[in-house]
Length: 608
Image (cartoon, rainbow, N blue to C red; front, side, top):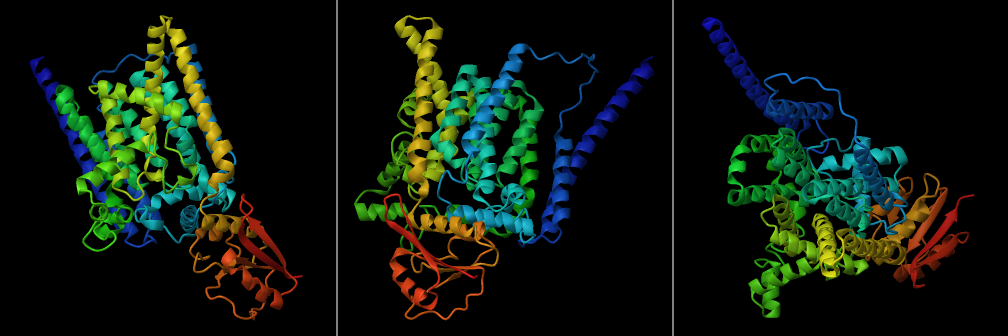
């Protein structure tokens, strides 16, 4: 019997050693396949072996998952039939589905018309997606338009391939990401602070004018919030339960986030600071989670590895998105001076005073100062008055509850948002707060719960009546946001700057022309057809030509296209007379702004 026990013990040790060895081999193979994926893709926009590189990447992630997967239970547990969902759980899931559907509808319905403007940056993103469809951009580990990772552009390529080259199709993935973030925030806040906070935060984010706007823009910014929410929720679940799969999911998302907007690059830094804070509050649990945290880091590393190798070979491409908007670059506006030093010299303030002022403006962009740059036309901060008041209550809760891991994570995201906005152009620039609005909505949820309790205590009412008053404040805030965005901002202010308005109106008109038509664009030096991707994305069937020099005589172009259009900006409208002399059988139309000011003149000659 003793010999048999020794044999069983040795067998178990051998099995454990073999299992550990298999994990090591799988992990090493995952790293090797990740490097192979980069080699198969190559350094150019067109991958040497596009399908093989993606298959190698997928295999490397699969092997990495095998290497860090949780150990199977040592003893078989008895099988139990799955319990039926309780009625309350079904009701909650129905509510979550309704929340997602409502958020998606607010973001997707008429998304080609709201916002009215079709910015050139969106058009450029759409053209990058079209290049993927045509096989002109196949290296998913390299970069596409504006040095942004190419993998992102494969997402809008799907609806564009199904629905055509329209802004509605281009903007559809952003609507999905925005709605997904809403339900993710609900789930996370419900788990961390209770269902009241979760529901209030989800409703606020669903109705937020700022979040709705960025969910109606076909760029990669909105995905920052999606990654912030789901990584935060998975980290909290993993920290609370010790479940390996939660950490693995967080690692997958952290690695994948690096293929999206530049703001996600701060996510690993936020996680590192969050873990360091655990040394002060929960050191013992941190020590017990070492293996899970290592698994998360390894998965994130493997997912990002091919792109990381590309950026290692092309550091300029990695730095470009951040450098071009950084106030720290040493050539503002002349060599040897960054923006803070330049402003200190020109205003007589010290560099620290200028920096503190920018940090203040970045913080006030959430609740007080009107946003600039993108979304400047709105003339509003991220939060309107009623939600801002609730959010300040919630922020106080976070500061008091600093020992709570969720509170620290949210505060770190807030600090990162403010810091990034403070060192970027046009502080507070509207495009820098996509992660910050998540914290703002969470603070609204916390403020709602706190206000409900305070109202009940102050008025000596049962808790339900206090919460009823808080619900009224929350609903008023949501209605104010929806009213502002869809009734005040969208009809007029969402038209963009004059050049964007011109590009949008020309694109809308010529998109209906038959294939093979021609556009002569008279906009230089103010703007050019080649400089705006709006028209090229929406009307690829129309050939565009810039007329750079003003006409001094009737042109001698041969018009042999189904439709030939001549588009004039107001300052070059007098050149229409030369065109009319040469082609008198056309039809001219002035397109005006809502203020009845001339915007663009279009003269169309139809070949009969």
